[in-house]
Amino acid sequence: VRIRPPVADGVIARRRPTDPSSASEVVRTDGSWVWQWGATSIAFQEDTEAELQVGRAKEYAFSRVFPQSACTATVYEAVAQPLVHRVCKGTNCCVFAYGQTNSGKTYTVSGTPSSPGIISLATRDLLAYIAGVPQQKALLRVAFLEVYNEKLRDLLAEASGCLPLFITEDSDRGGTCVKGLTEHVVGSLDDVLRLARQGEQRRVFGCNDVHEHASRSHVVFQLILETQQVGQPYASLSVLSIVDLAGSEHHFHPLDAEPQDQKRAREGKLIRQSLLALSRVVETLARSPNDHIPYRDSKLTHLLQSALGGNSATAMIATINPWTSARDDRQTLATLHFGMTAQSVHNRPQSINLISADRALLQSYEQQIAELRLQAGQGLEQIQQLQKERDSEATQLQVEQQQQRELTRRLGQQNHEQLQLQRKLQNLERFILTACPLEEGYGQALHGIGIDEEQQRMMQTGSTGSRLRQPPNPRQRSRSLDAVRPCQPRAPSMFVPSKAFHDELAQQMLQAQRQRIAHLESQLLE
Image (cartoon, rainbow, N blue to C red; front, top):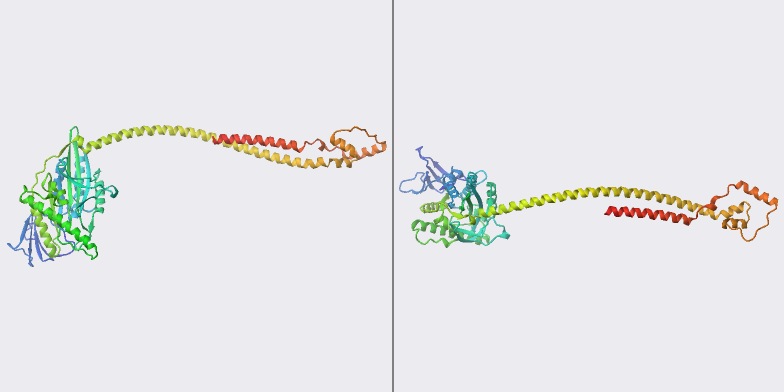
């Protein structure tokens, strides 16, 4: 039994006994109940007096009572750690927390960052055991299950890939198991805590007049250990189930008055039914274990069948909160009564749960590892081959880039030459445009120097005609020569090439240059 420390100062009187060797403490709460507890017992008396009187006090004896000053690590070392050691040897074990809301069940099981719970401490010890046995192969898996409104729900499965769950017998695990429940392989404490937080976030909670974040479902957190000694043809499979039950109070009062009252009332009814079924199973096992045990009265008892009366070593932690009102003191008495009954149930689990190596998940993982290593080796060869091809392609690309730069340079040079030719062409065209008027006006120039029209015609056409004219008289000849001498030399325009000749020459040069540029551009594109 673990006693929760007071959240507020609800203690009216507290007195330690006069005997220093006694570990008991007497407390009178605001409910006018007087409690006294020691190392293995709890007594109470409903009276206004602060002293317990012999004959009037009711006493419950347990294997261990943890006062409010005890930390979770102390509770774990005394209750759960021996079960973890048995799990390492191949035995199924179970530890569950039972008590009313706000008595410390979830705090004991899950803990906090500053005060780790049973899940964290058990995982730490399992991983330490795995690391400490060199001649052994091990595989640790985690599963998280919720029982809400008599329905099973996988807290670690995605909503889109959630499979229907049902309870069945599994000879490999030596008892009941849940088919369809996802199991995640873990390799560190951080992996386990991450999955535990993920499941807690998906768990159903609600508010009531006792706690604003009260659990409205039962949850089972499983640590599945599979080990195999090197060279052995079999493997050991064991499961540690850590159960956090919903509040055991018999009255559930929602805070609001909305239509959600019906939902809350149904939740409370189903929780009470499952816990009453658990009480009947425990009482039947304690009274007459050979009789029919009603395990199938609820999903919870069916799921815990192996833990309650089968192939499992089981411990229960009853959490109480004596710092509440008189009404809640009745719930505390019900928890103590259930704990007294449960401790009289004795299971006889098998020492080792063995399975053949070919059916072990560890063997399957080793095969997958070998296949993945083979695929990784093949993939490495492919990577190396691809790297060689990449280097070859890179070298070829560098050559092509060099060729491209050379072609680009040549193209630029050709463009420069093209520009120069175009400039020459423009200059030549301007020359032709200035020569043509000179050729057309040449007849007027000849006429101005005293040459008659017939001679002009003969000089322009290059013919002398069919008829010769009479030579001029000496006086006319002298005047003509005198008129010609100042105009020497004669105009050369009569020997200038025609405009068509120059246009044709320029077009030929331009066409050749364009062909060279087109050739260079095609090489550059290739």
